[in-house]
Image (cartoon, rainbow, N blue to C red; front, side):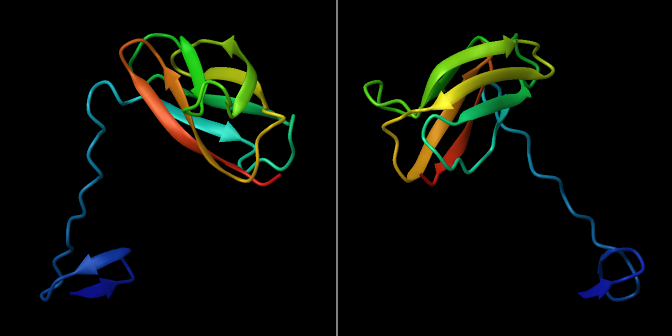
Length: 121
C-alpha cells in the first residue's frame, strides 16, 4: 500500500484505490446524539447548552447529568426545544462539582445518547 496524494487515499500496486468503510451505526436504542457547550466548563454555576438530535426517535424527554442523584453534575436542567431533529436544553453546573468528567444522558423515548462533560473549576 502507498498513499495516493491525488485521490486522497491509499492505493494498492497497479493504481487500484482501497475502499474505506464508514463506521457502523450505533444499535437501535442508542442513536440519539448529544453535545454540551462549553465543554470543558470552567466555573461552578456556569450555564451550559445541551444540543443534539434524537436519531430517529421521539422528541427529547429527559436530560440526566451524572450517576449520583445526591450530587448531580448539572442542576436546573430545562428543555428549551424538544424537537427531535435539533433539541436544545439549558442547565447550570453544580456548585459542588470539582475537576473531573461526568456523563450527560439524553432520552428521546426509544432512543438515548450520552456524552462526557469535562469540568475544570
